Amino acid sequence: MPWGYWLPRLLRGVDIRTLGSGNPGATNVWRTLGFKFGIAVALLDIGKGAAAALLGLWVGGDLVGVLAGVAAMIGHWRPLFLGFARGGKMVATTGGVALAIAPLPALAAAGVWIVVFFLTRYASVASILAAVSLPLWALVFGASWPVVAFTAGAALAIIVLHRTNIRRLLAGEEHRIELHRPRLGRSGSKPSPPTPPLRSNRV
Image 1 (tube, helix red, strand yellow):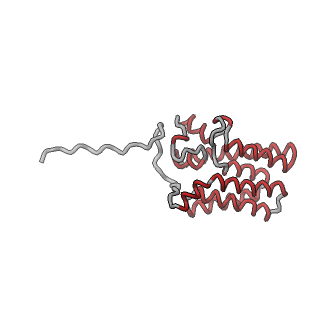
Image 2 (tube, one colour):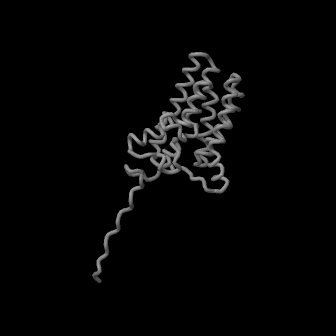
Image 3 (cartoon, rainbow, N blue to C red):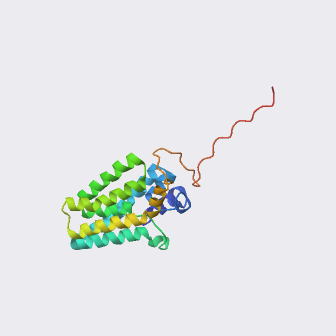
């Protein structure tokens, strides 16, 4: 369920893959269409990860919950409904899976994301550090071995998927997210500045 593609397409008539970084994830939606769209996509992505993992937990415990959650993450990375083209970077979906199978570590990692984001305004830095902290929190809270293994693997996957962001950070070219920015028009372009009034030739 590529919500980062579907929501802008349905509500604004734009293909998010043609805007910003071209990534159909919550961060690019937030950066190009605004806070409300970004949060909506993030919540929907968290929900799909949590739903898959909860179903797995109900069917067969931690291991099946982890496997179901991983399936949702892979589906987010290469969405079926986009012809297995590039999808999002799995941060929100991973958060949803973790929230289902390890609520306390997930909430602690979410706290890391929030603090780092508001200190730096870099969603990529917040995502990477939150992902790295997740297996540590899982160990601190005594999670089962399938959950610890999942959190470690998810952290590694998120770092790999953010390698372009890491290169931009090292080069000083990564873009910060502004909490207040002009909204895009329905076509996805920024509104044009007002045309200045014509000056009279009279003295």
